[in-house]
Structure formats: C-alpha cells, structure tokens
Image (cartoon, rainbow, N blue to C red; front, side):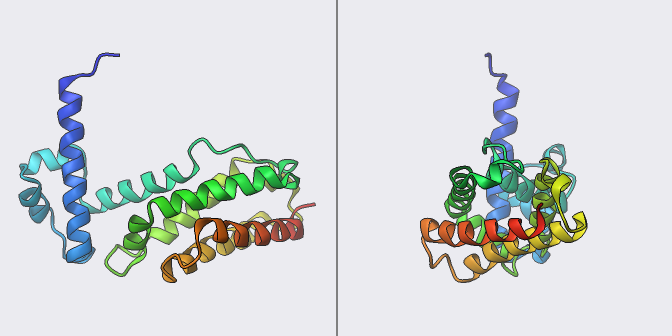
Length: 191
C-alpha cells in the first residue's frame, strides 16, 4: 500500500493538535481552551485547524469517541448463549478493563472537572449501542430501556468509582469484581 505524503502530513498535524489540546485540557481546563490558543500552541494556521476539526467541541468529542471505540475493538461477540460461558464473559471484561487501565491517564482527564463533563454520558450511550448490537435485548424480561439503564449504570458507575479511587485495584482484581457482578445482574433481567 502506497502512503500519500499529504496523508502523513495531515496525520502528523492532527497528532500535534491533539497533543496540544490535551496539554491545555490538563493545565487550564476545557472551558478556558480557545481555538486561538490551540493554533498558536500547535504552530498551525486557523484554516489548518478547521481542516481537521469543526471546533473544540468536535475535537473533544472525536477524542472521547475514539477512546471508547478502542475499548471494544476486536472483542469476542457476545449473545444470550455466550453469557453462560464464563470464559467468554470474563475475557471480554478483562480486555475492556485492561484497555481502560492502559489509557488511565485519558480516562482520568476526561472524567475530571477539567474536561467538558460529557464523557460518562458518551460512555453510557456507547455502552447502550453495544448492547443493541447483540441479541440480548430480545430475551430481556424487563423493558429494554430499564434493562439498559441497569446494565449501563452499573458498568459505568463501577468504572467511574475505579477511576475516582485512582485505580487502587489492579486490572485483574477489578476484572474479578466486575466478572462477579455482571453475570448476576444479567440473570436478573434475561430469560
């Protein structure tokens, strides 16, 4: 595959914008960041910034959605029948938890008051979309909206608390906690 020189330059500039944005997010917080600061710190012109992102909201959304997408990349498929296979369930949970831990600095930053305050709402919406892609909703004994609220709420809150506690448990310990809770919860809402 031949790589286009323009693609390399485009990607390099985007990485620089992202890097400077994350530095500013950490130091001054989302509300204080301006596109003007970003273009100065990234050493680019305004049109270059807008060739990559619509505005700072688009940039942070892009970063957060990409981070969440990376969590579930190449996971084994889950369905009603695989919920009974502890190896599949535990493997999925361990993979997600390890990926959160590997990117813990970003999770902490996006969860902090320096961010836009929308990360866990995006996380929750993302989790719901993942569940909708399975056949699990077809077998729910509780209306879908409430079932998703339970599953989503528990998983997102567990991860939030792990982050708040500064990842006190190792990924293995935390995976064990989640692996113990989720199957019990699923059994309560799936026939």
